[in-house]
Length: 236
Image (tube, rainbow, N blue to C red; front, side):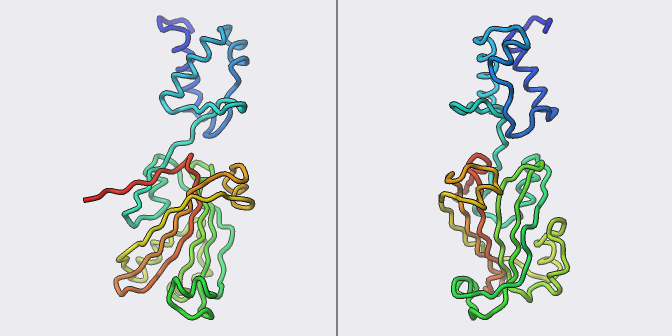
């Protein structure tokens, strides 16, 4: 650390490089102030000032009694547009991926029959996915669509295939996306899949999408952590 900058700024730069090269990955706990003090021969006060600089930049988050962690980037999701989750994640500078936890035909039942305005005996197709950015869990999605809306839908691998691309191939044009946002507490298995503590408060977003004929073509219920997502709307 031989330059003209104060020691705390040199240390802050060093930690920032470790974050940028993924040596300290997203959400990872960095060494404690005591450990950093011993490794670099600096006072605890100097180390704390370096960490404070990176907290101010939004790169680190200090959790009382737990340590200091690399901040996960927040994804700003407009709630007044129809756009795929994959694109939201990609535009936030992360590499999007999916883990499909279930993809199966189910009866609509009373609840989803009302949403889709169909008989409870009508067939729907459920895609239950964990959305990831740079390999880190970001959102948990339960997506229901009419079973016959995409021919041979069971043959598609939704870890790699975009549902929105399939809609386009079928000539389906979206007209409206009715969105409702709640704050709920999650338990297992949702909390475990999102890698958050059981009982944590998260956003639950309901999306009901119609096509230009007024038919409901998709309903999605998503669980996303407030540490990861923000939601915005533009009024004109």
